[in-house]
Length: 216
Image (cartoon, rainbow, N blue to C red; front, side):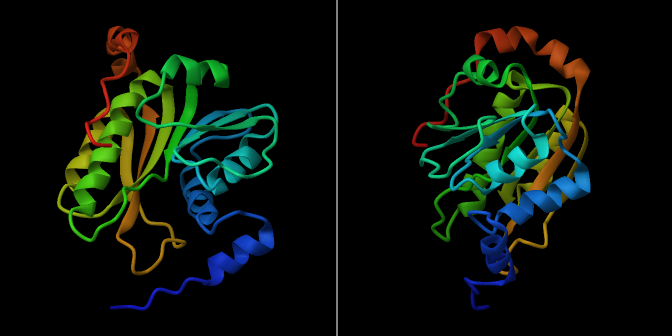
């Protein structure tokens, strides 16, 4: 088994550039490749602690944009006024409240969430988290918007990419160089939230998202 290097180049770079975690460079790579959002955009960060993605997104959208983060753990950072971090369960949220904080539907939802790893069944728990994200996307994203979410690779990965492709005009996997070599994590990116689906789902949005799976 390859030895995990804790203080690698990305860790040192994050410290030097003021990011709270090396994971900042994963979002930076995804953004450089796919341009998920730009200045003035509204972005939702699911699983935002410790806050590195909030830092990156806040820099990109600038003071005219809004970034809202949700995590079970508090984010202990001094954030600019256009970036908000809330403590809460990402799957027990009120979409209307989130869009109210943001000032409208989001241009992008990003998720770096992962289940507690045990070494057995991690892939399936990760896929369940991603499918929950897909359940709430219709209540949060405007037509044409983007999605990027982390998943552990495994047998259900191809099916998950297809599910994203049914909701977006383009869906693909992408593994940033900042991911550790020994990690099974990768990201699924969805570009161009389908307008036709958004219209069809208006009635479902009024009902609110389905309840979170038991035990999460």
